[in-house]
Image 1 (cartoon, rainbow, N blue to C red):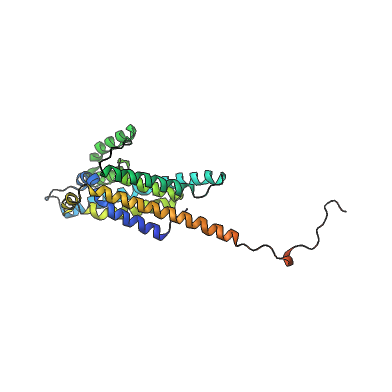
Image 2: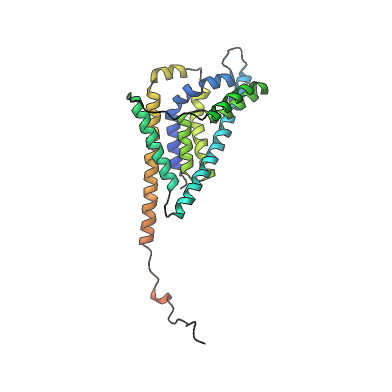
Length: 255
């Protein structure tokens, strides 16, 4: 089930609303990629910003393509079993569960965490260690690409949304939209974002959780409306008129 402009708008708003969470997760990597020292030239800093965010865009886009492809495979298998929009329903259900779990954690409830696979951690660490070999701009690009491996629930929540599109192209569009929503706050790190984050504090995860639940609800409504409109179309189909029905049928057994 491909998204609409309204869906991408909801993704953008949710990404903007939850982007302060990205400041906490990716702030150190922005500093590593772009530098925060005042003696760094503006042009060097700008090149680092462009390379870092460009690497993030490529990484997120590739993740969206993979997620959309996986969702398409799920939809194809589900249609063979007579189920429609399975990827979108699965994505919405997962987002509701994850968003609900985040809200419960904010109330103090202890819930188990899903551990990050070891090979993901090792790949990320070795990549960061090797990034210094590429020079300032190459290092920023490499770090941006590697952020796709971060154990960030906010990032992977949008990957789930991308899988729900069941389309590689639309999956990439969802992740690119998510990227757009995170660029302003990451680009502005060091210009008051730290103060903003300290004021919001633990509310960041709650904001992200609510945004995720809103998108999941929006997805469920779209699926329901699509199924309802399809049912109405099928039930409103007119039977063939008598004028178009054949008046004589040739018997295959007759000469």
